[in-house]
Image (tube, rainbow, N blue to C red; front, side, top):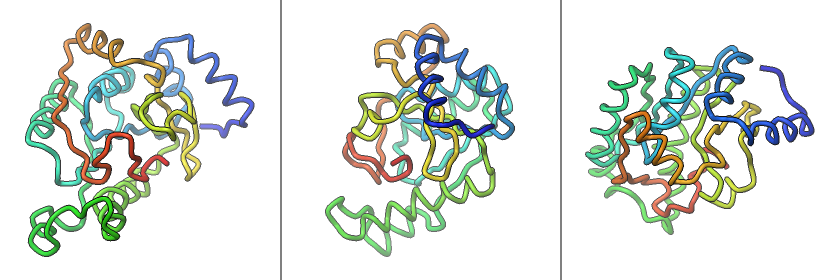
Length: 209
């Protein structure tokens, strides 16, 4: 995938705002060599997984499992993986949740100085390891406007801090539009989700920002 200038990116984002996620995905897949999609199986993730896998059924789906997901999330993940026949590449922390619970007393509070190291160990290290091993030129995500202040500052196309083209086909979509998309394609959703590195919905974990 070529590196786009800021001006080119702005023009593309203006054009992409008027087309469907499927059309965005098709254009990106046609112009990339090593695309990946990341997921944590949070609410509405089935939409982006469906949209991308419909165009590229064998695309690598990177799942960085912190080990602290809810039982509902794990069941939801299996349902989506099976329904869409996803090519999942699973990455986990080097320590298990049980090990951490026994030695460190579980998840540090967000005001605890240890929370930053916890975030690095359970989310950032597995993610960086995944990116090194898969070496993508395109990274599909389900980031949307209105989720956090950082996400409000990007667009459908943006660049990660490592220079990977990040593509968020549903960036301008509301929950209501995504509800309709899920219903149209008979896709499941699950709201009982917990991210131990964010805790609060409007916080970034450091993976994107």
